Image (tube, rainbow, N blue to C red; front, side, top):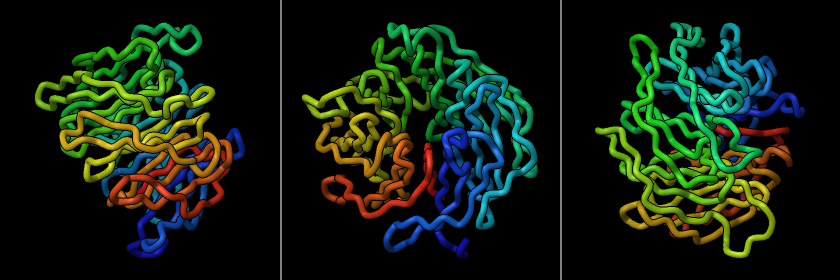
Length: 346
């Protein structure tokens, strides 16, 4: 790793030929990624999250047993810290670091767990566990809860858990002292929408929830003091007349609050939605090719000048320059990343 260079980390499915966790340097001028090292020490590290100091990277192990692992990323290749710690659930798909804990969403068992972080950065045993209840109208995908994402609120007071199976978002509180998790409220979204991921507007007053089963973006007002989420609008993320099924996967909001980008699998596109000044009225303005097949994740750089897309089935991470006026991305390069599932920028 070059001193002072921006870094990127790529998660992948080792069961499908992925390299595990890959570290890469980011060229400040072009945005190009240059891999510097990989580790396959953990099975199927499908989603990653950095500690705020960017020295430790956390990964879920999306397996039937389910675990969270920590990696030292101060060198060219990620180095496993201790042993992966079980999450007391199956198929964890997402995690976040907050208040000295790693919190993970378990798709398989429909639960959310909290684990304290030890002084060396490794996760400890589970101290908090919330099991979701309920289902939805889709008999194949919503017969049971499927927690898909956990996202800390902008001020860190609450955690929002997005559940595809129950068509809802739960607002949870984490006790930083004990590691206990409690559900404070649950917001119902449109039945059958299958919410997958959520992102906040930079102002903190709105959250956007991406549906996987119904390819839409739901706009919600967020009251950070009360911990309440209120749906107010829903807009499509596919152009009218789009053929075949489309399965949205991930979204990002531009740092200036002007645009939302959403990856759509099946269409293999990046949807571009323009926001009004208040952030409450998105409008779909473009859908451009994702640069590969089955875009599972995307990330914007801190300036909003570039997007990075993990294309799982074509095995690459593609980067795009973003037009600052329109928000429309243009492909500028790619790097091979077999079974890529996540990309995180430091």
